[in-house]
Length: 77
Image (spheres, rainbow, N blue to C red):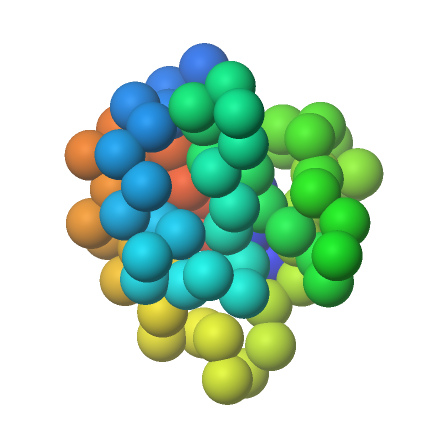
C-alpha cells in the first residue's frame, strides 16, 4: 500500500501527523506531506510523491485518511 497527499486540498489541521507521525509531517507552509523515512515527498500523486506504508502503519494511515477534514489523503493499493 502507498499513500499521498494532495496539498491543494489540505486544510492544515495536522490530524494526520498526530495519528501517524511516522508517515505524515507538517511543514512551515502549514500543509501536510507524506514521508519516506527522513525524506519529505512533495510530488502529489506522482511517483515521487507516493510513500510506502508498512503493515505496522496501516491502521493509523487508514484512520488518518478517514478523519482528514480536507479529504486530501489518498491510499493506493
